[in-house]
Image 1 (spheres, rainbow, N blue to C red):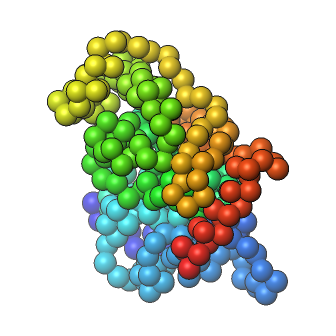
Image 2 (tube, rainbow, N blue to C red; image 1 turned 30 degrees about the vertical axis):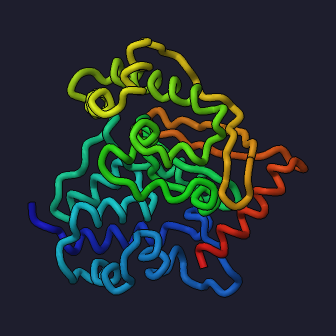
Amino acid sequence: MLIDRTGLAQFLRHRREALQPEDVGLPRGPRRRTSGLRREEVASLCHMSVDYYSRLERERGPQPSHQMLTSIAQGMHLSLDERDHLFHLAGHNPPTRGTLSEHISPGLLRVLDRLNDTPAEIVTELGETLRQTPMSVALTGDTTRYTGPARSKGYRWFTDPASREIHAPEEHPFLTRMYASGLRKIVTLRGPGSRAAHLAELLLAQSEEFRRVWDDHEVGIRPHESKYFIHPEVGALELTCQILVDPGQVHSLLVYTAVPGSESYEKLQVLSVIGAQSLR
């Protein structure tokens, strides 16, 4: 497929000018005169240089890669139809839709963008973190950095002992059963040959603990609403987890909060300062 440079440039320009700062979690500021977002703002959202993005709008530069287009689609909060249109303009076949898609819906992104003062993350049905707020990174670390099977929280639980350190020890037996139960449900739902089935096969080969709980055939073990974390700098926290599910993309937004006035609430305030310092 050939790239349509003129169509791509016009589409990007139109989408940039239609986006408002508040749509993507940016402050408007008193001196803003241009309609929509600036090129440097879009470039930052898409994790690319201003020069690279500017050349796309000017019908110049190399053909964008699949990875770059994925970043643009998410950074500009494109819908699935808009994402597919972007890929076709750039001369690529768009990614698959459905359960394997990692494209986050614009609505879910808008909610996440407004939660900068709260630990929150968007995850797939296999527990792969797609996006985190700064407070989420301060609480659990950057869980988007993993690759391969280790992207799944459940996989890390059984293969990486360090992944358990942030959870209170008394929670470990329940979480072990919950992760095995959750994976069994998805394997049954998606069937043989699915990514879930592949994860189960890997864990059966690598973890004796997983084999033991897998053989119990437990299903329907749901997460507790209260989560107990052990943070290396602020200590123990009791947080409430609310879950918003996007059924169209099989993604979930997890939001962690503490009861106002509680010790955990005060610790979250300290954690926000620690997270801001880390970002700087």
